[in-house]
Image (tube, rainbow, N blue to C red; front, side, top):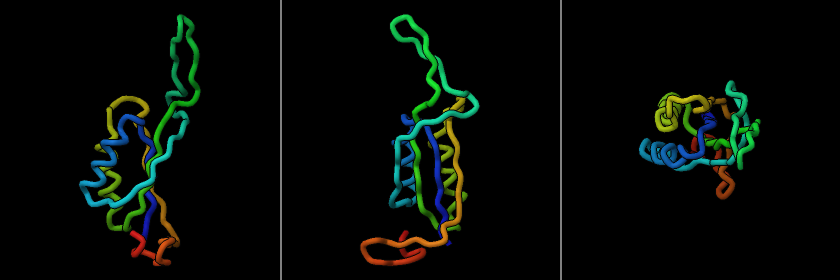
Length: 113
């Protein structure tokens, strides 16, 4: 079976996450710029002496398709690479993928990995 692992991380940690995933054999990933907020509820910034509230914080969403057997290892790898031990480090979750197909060849299931 296949799982989709999704991680929301700080933008400056993307290269570290990518390299860590390559080092454990992940051959591909998708990264998207996203924005949101968690417990921190945004942040305050000062520009030209005026303070203003940023309600949505910039983040990067990383998505990786992996074999069910590798889910824990990949989640741990992402967590270690993305961790700063400060608020806003992000979240990681995994969900079952019912079907997956490689567009070029029509391969299905684990063959798409």
